[in-house]
Image 1: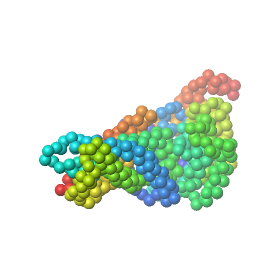
Image 2 (image 1 turned 180 degrees about the horizontal axis):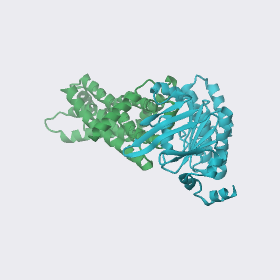
Image 3 (image 1 turned 90 degrees about the vertical axis):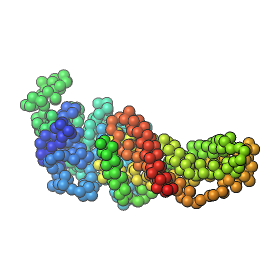
Image 4 (image 1 turned 135 degrees about the horizontal axis):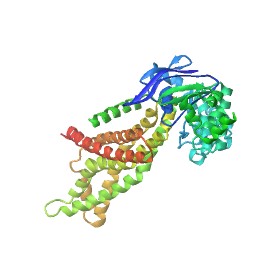
Length: 250
Length: 245
């Protein structure tokens, strides 16, 4: 479980996060949704320590991440997997080497053990036959799946996904959504997905946090999302004609 | 005051870079890759420039002397020019253009495509992982390239002198040995070690803090070359004053 308590972050005069508190549950896909520029990505970066919050605390299963030294954080970071919006694969390495990378840096596995573990992770994302390719030779969907394989290589306790479906066609997006969902329940990971893709939210979310102008102004689940109740949330969720039709049907 | 901000940030980055590598076996592999990238892949351009510069210095010196100035001055001038200034200063300047821009664009691209964020989130010290092998390789391999440049430059000078009949080999050899001081080579190599450090670390700094997209990576690459050259030139003056006077 990950807990955010009263996070505040400003860049100059721009107050990006305002008293953000949230709980992301273990074994569930926790979505963070909101408009572009609402503070979702800053919130995630504060959570994983890429940006230091001005105030507030982040707890990983009760461990206060914000008060830890860099050396202490290293232990938690090795329990975190992250899937980036642009995949962030190391382009000088093959797919296999990308997945092996965290194992090579932080485990005492032999070469053969590392290869086997990477092969198993690639098998899990159905990319066993792409191991010798370079990221530039992979499609967007394949790159995302390699990103997931790399993220799960170290058996993480926490998985962060930043816009996992951006730039993907709807069918591939569903494959990625299902993969994230399956892996979360299979490994009992605390998964946080940052997205503004309503298809993904309806497909894979267990809990949803809606961020508006730097604050979490609503949280609940899929059913609650369709009921609405908060104006900003309704404006966001039912911005498209399709979602308005779905609401009428429900 | 902006420059003080950059100096502070550069120092902090160096502090972060010069930490113990996560795994020595990984560091060793990266170091070998960088030695090849900075050293072996620069061999051609260093050799080409040194040969032509040595030959040109020989011809220019021959053109200047005459009458009462002895012919062996040609060998003396070629040796002194190559050892004191051309090889130890201009070769690192050229490497700042070739290697420095490569380092800045490589690290800059990793920054803007979130690859550095990925390293940080995994718990890898990204500065140490990316920068330390490049700096160590630069400090180690640039002096070798400079020694190579000295040898090739002087050799090319001797060859063109003999081939054109401007300087008999015996005179050139005598000029090469006149008033030779080993300290000149020590001075040159000391400068080279410092310049190797500057060109790799300054370039890495500009790449590491690149923000934005392809355009900014290009700009950071240009800044890396410009600032490496400026700092090399200033250091050249300071080191020369310190070591020769």
